[in-house]
Image (cartoon, rainbow, N blue to C red; front, side):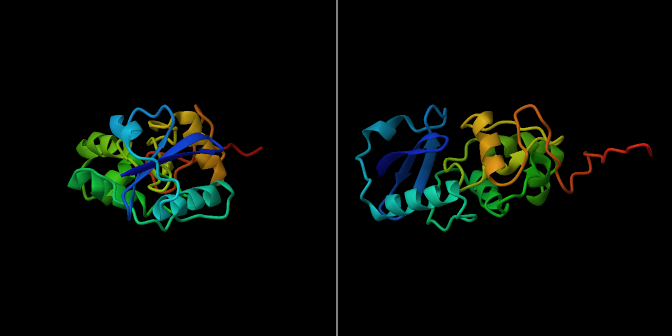
Length: 182
């Protein structure tokens, strides 16, 4: 395993990879950063690290909307199912924890387990957990911090701000605002 940290518009981003796959992308200060990351050998010249950094930089520059990196996040089969589904959320789209739960064929009682799996996503941005919002459109739960989640959503065209609800298409719990005629 190799590590490399580079500065992006939202702070430092730590990349962790094997010889062939990206296994982690963590913002500085992120609680889910592996404790042993500091003991990994530096790998800025490793091809997978160079490609990952190039794709992250292209994303932040607005030139990349879909990552095409070989990724191998470590997790349980359930977590990997959730993360695989997150990868199907297109650039510029948002979904809710409830919608993810339903797409997995699970009942509402499983939403907390889905949220926990999303929160343990080890590859920030490339596995786009930042595109998942609360049922009412509020920004909730992001390991890199809500201000970063809002910044990532703004980069993708959403008027996201911490404490402000985003409209979520297809969630029956959000109702359109009815305005009385002027």
